[in-house]
Amino acid sequence: MGIEHFSREQYTAHDKRSLPYRWYKKHQHKQTDSVWVVVHGITAEMRALHDFGMHLKEVGDVVVPTLRGYDLGHPRGDIPMVGTYDRDLEALLNQLRQKGYSRVYWVGHSMGCANLLRLLSYNRDFGDGYVFLSPFFHPSLQVYRRPEGNGQEEGYELKMKKIFLLYFLNRFNIARWSHEKVATIPDEFDEASTLSLSFRLLVSRFVPSIPKDFFSRIEKPIIAAIGSEDEVTDSSKLHKWWKKQTNHLYVELPEEDHNSLLKSKKTVELLEDWAMTMNNS
Image 1: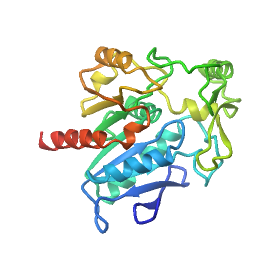
Image 2: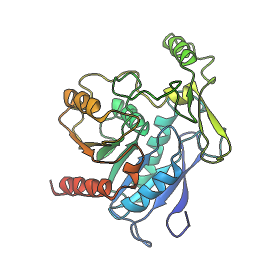
Image 3: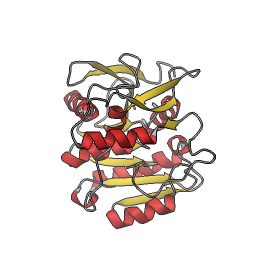
């Protein structure tokens, strides 16, 4: 990941904290009219999103923020309060607009798609288009594959009983224990270690529930894409759910899995065609 490929930048969050993002520019000495903001999944996905940024910058500038609680500059595995991500991403949007970008497209990968749904739940116009890649929208959906063995994917652990208990307490506005750690994931900044995530960090990535008319209320262009070999989500089940929700575009890419989708030129070609259709309409 040499500096010749992207620059490390920071933006100022709502609480005046400086948060990091990687900026992939199509042209070295000027920026394009459009920017694609890519929100990562349950891990920071540093390598996969670097490959994606390198490919997608041929279409337009790309910004990849590292969410608070994952980056090295702040307390890790936790955030100050529920809803922090919403305000952080809004602050990033405002600063990208100030840079002069006339079109801002939002791309969620995996659990990053859930972050976009949260923003869309109260602001349907915060972007000019929304892309959901290998989407993990909400844990309640009956579309996910079950891991083999003990039910936990290698390197990942979810303390479901603790999550349900804290979720129940939060419904009654009891947030005293929301800082408790409920998940363990691989630490992408230290391959020999793991990172534990708090309840309020995880719950801040999801809407409480997805109303049946959720997508029909969104007028801006939307596209969802998933690999036929996705090992997290069953594409056929997700497609059936999607058709009941919306007429927005759904694409299955043959032979791609949850992360290979980010490295595939087919994905970038799909988004390039999608963006051209919007710009010409």
